[in-house]
Amino acid sequence: MTAAPETETRARPRTTIPPAVRAAAPGGERRRSVAQLRATDVYAMSGAAAAALALTWLLFARLLPFNGAVGFVVVAYALFLGLYALLVSFDEDGPAVADRIAAAVVRSLGAVLLSVLVFVVSYTLWEGRKALPHLNFFTEDMRLAGPLEPLSTGGIKHAIAGTLIEITIALIITVPAGLVCAVFLNEVPGRFARFVRTIVEAMTALPSIVAGLFIYATVILTLGFPESGFAAGLALSVMMLPIIIRASDVVIRLVPGTLREAAYAMGTSRWRTVWHVVLPTARSGLATAVILGTARGIGETSPVLITAGFGAEFNANAFSDPMVSLPLAALKLVESPEPNMIARGFGAAATLLVVVLALFVVARSIGGRGPGQLTRRQQHRRVVASRKDARRFSTRTHQGPGGGLAVTSPPAAGRLARMLCAPLGVLFVRRGPVGAGRAVPRAPYGAVRPGISLRKSAQDPRSSS
Image (cartoon, rainbow, N blue to C red):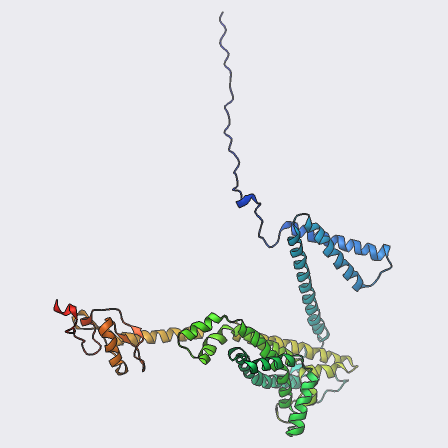
């Protein structure tokens, strides 16, 4: 009996796919991630913050006889920076650790400033919440409202009008003068320009009371003007002018010199270069300079009190009678011990914030566009002008007899056009006294006819063919 051969079942070898091999970075170094925020940064910052709070609580509550909220925050912040540097040093080298610490300090300072701003605005709105809902607060003055009157009587209409009139007078004076002075400091360098820049820098730290006393002594006492909104506008302009000049000077300095050189190379005069190149390029920064100057002047109280006085009635005449502003009205209202008057004072301060915000939005909408950016109306005007130019060129250029290109040349370009046509074979046509400008496509001598046919010259070697 024969036994059947045993068949051995062999397992088929499986196909193994090798793992993908990443290309090594040049020099064998590990590629560093360029992301702004990594998970290790979040873990290090969170751990450092938690450990700093715990250690500070342990020091203040258990180990040392310390107390006070300010000391707690300072110690916790110092411990946070130290612990954060220690945790970052486990993964990074020295320059990276210094960069992380600097970034943490800058961001924390920004957060502190933002929190202070939010607190000031929120506190002002909260304290003025009782007066702001009343419509009469914005449509009436304080002529019939006493300290004991309810909030349904009286308002700050006179202060709003006074603020707008005074700041408008100051802007009419300071914006042209400030921009012209800034352009002078940059475009006309010299000894006198350096002297003016020194005076401007010194005036930026001028106390507001000095500006008020200067206008009071010169305009009111010497020239005989009464205390009015016009005098207050002059005092505010003295405060605003150095700020606008200094900020505009810095902005115009940032305009690349190659833009000026390109304009000069095209034959443009200096004032046209400033008007069409420098100022449009620096438009956004100049708007910011005007905003800074406005913010400096609109919140002043002492110059207004000295030059415009104080009144409780509405006055729209800027050249006579006292005129009050919102900062001065808020100061006088919060000095009263009555709760309703204090609420009116904080309502006036909140209204001042809204007015400054509105002026900021208007300034940014006017000058916030970048260089070369046009509004829809400007784009429409440019398209219309381009279409008119195209129609004018089409009427001046038409097909001449014999298939040649005929161009109707203006009389002012006659002789110079013929002189250029003879040696070059190209007719330059442009309206104006110069006579050279736009080039018509190159054509043979005999095919170019500027009104009168230009025949081939006898001296032309190609005329014999």
